Image (cartoon, rainbow, N blue to C red; front, side, top):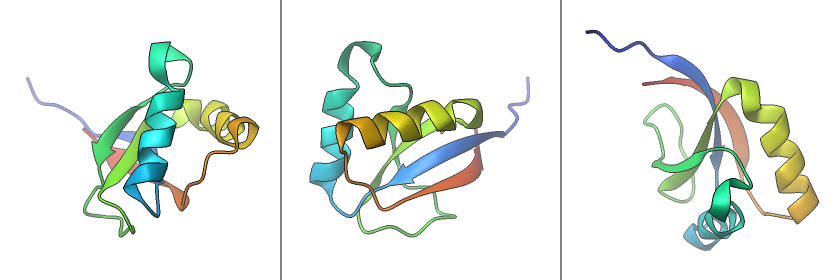
Length: 80
């Protein structure tokens, strides 16, 4: 069975502390997504990123804003 890439919104961070703050806020499924290594298509200040299916991008953006979580950028990338 061959896996297919699907579009994801990938959040990058300036620091590992910012990535961990998002992960802590997501405990219990409150926020969609998961921590991943920064994809090679993206350059970022920290080696960690947060990934959600592109359909959940708006939900994630609202959560970041509401909780005042720091991030570098949100980029759409095709991931496995």
